[in-house]
Image (cartoon, rainbow, N blue to C red; front, side, top):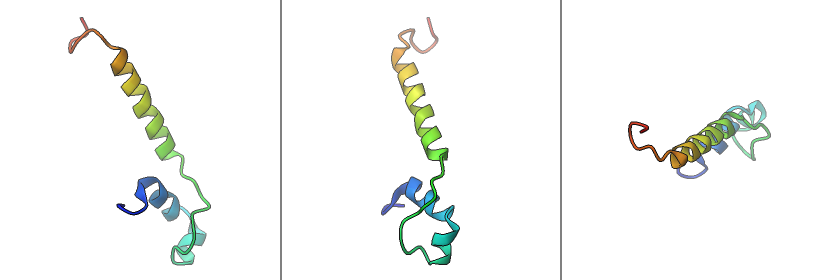
Length: 58
């Protein structure tokens, strides 16, 4: 994880060809889960930045 990161590693583990080749090369598969999680985090961060109501919303 310190070398390639979670997204690259997940893509590699989802690529059967890459597994069969003992992970020689780069993934040809892309798992969208990481993209969806990043988009949701960004949405939540922007939403909380817009919230000026304090901890209890008032």
